[in-house]
Image 1 (cartoon, rainbow, N blue to C red):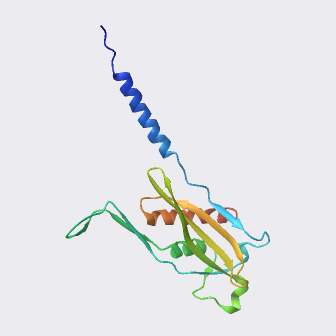
Image 2: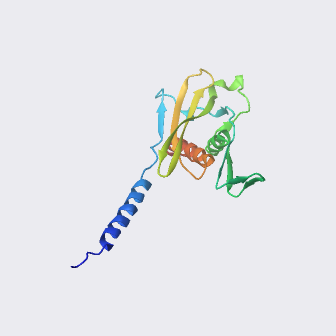
Image 3: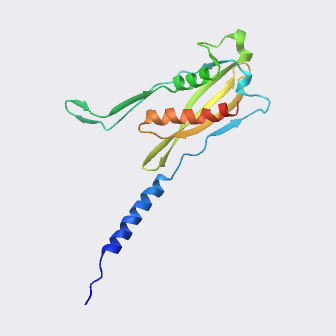
Length: 172
């Protein structure tokens, strides 16, 4: 009696596992969404911006703790308002430390919020929304939403902000 080799079934199982891991890695971020409210109004109609202050996002990877303290890993911190300010300044806008009544018509207010989390690949992504409103009328100019995924939550936020604002300045 000839015994069938179990190698082909092991190869099939290995192939199935590799294909499964590749398919899990194919999940991608949702595309950034920009919602405008008035087709005659754009952030480029403004020269100045005031950004609502945000708290830092601090996160770590690979950290373990004992009764004597925390060891190893990488700790990263991101302040969303700082990242948003940097992108706006780089694109020619002027940041104001307070809203100046003499410049209301030229000033927009920028707000930031975390709006969701979603399981992606072997981790999760964080979705953020950035709102631009007119300082003069308090009407929304546009809202940008995107998600990001990195090594830490701080990376997720930074990547999501960059992805959310990138389409605004590509069309410029």
